[in-house]
Amino acid sequence: MEIDPQLLNSIQNLSVAQFQLLQRIISSFEAGVEVTVNPNSDLCSDPEFSDYFANLFSVYHSITEHKFEKKSFEFAFKHASIASGYECEINKNSSNQGEDVTRGSERISLKTEGEKTENTFKISKFSEARFIANFKTEIEESDIASLKGGEQDKNLRQSALIAKRKEELLPGLVKEFKSTVSHHLNSYDRIIGLKSQSIEKDGEVISFRYRLLEIPKQLIERALLLSADEFKPLRGNGGTSAPVFVDGAKAFGITLDGSVEKISITGIKISSCITHAEFIVPVSV
Image (cartoon, rainbow, N blue to C red; front, side, top):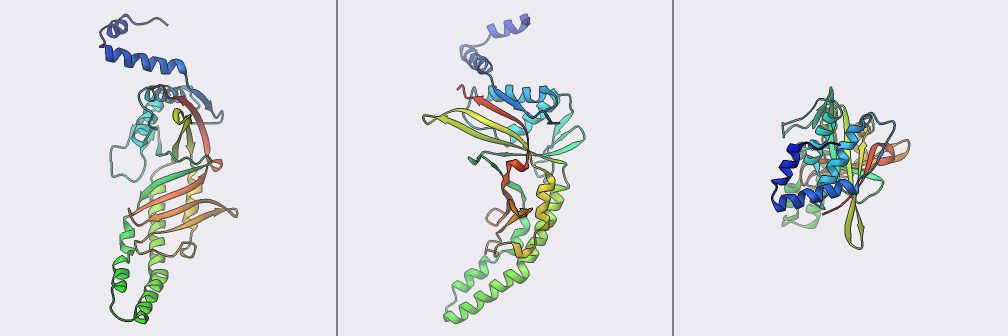
């Protein structure tokens, strides 16, 4: 490949520190990235898409041992899509609860995860769940605990509170949960996740394994079939959880986190997802 004389001139004008950094980036390219692409992937049908990710991972890990995170993933996905011939824009509304990027005509939600688990994917924050605040009973629970009356009175009030949570609050919470999840899922067409895992040798991070996954929307929609009876008893902070089964086997778990008012989805089996591509990236810091 013929090198542009202007580029050579620019390199000659670099400071010593800049030149050393450039050498590290070039060394990372020379080290290469092990890329495996699913031949049936529509996302990676153009090699420019996976090539962009591979090159960006190389540059990134020539300067840091830290894993790729959400905002970096959004920009990487955008520019990989543009490199492969798509128009792609990031949603600039930070309070938006729907798509993160629009690729062509597709609205896509992007998720990142860095858990050590090999065969599952966790969506730590599927969506906000401010409605949980309407179902908290911590104050009532505290009032009961501070009663100066006898234990019998406390037990009666505690039993009444437990009944209220089960018969009134939990069904209302589940109704709000379903409405929120349904609205969220209707706000985009696909869910694409990036799972990162560090690979260590003698206590040192030597590379990262990245998997570009697609979590089927139809799978997450199974959570809309849950009934209140399938959730664990409501806690004082409004939190609860439930397993979601498909064909008799647990497919994933739903957690309504009352401490930070969010919905999490845990234990999504990667075997139930589409693996579009995998990258093994040496760390050359």
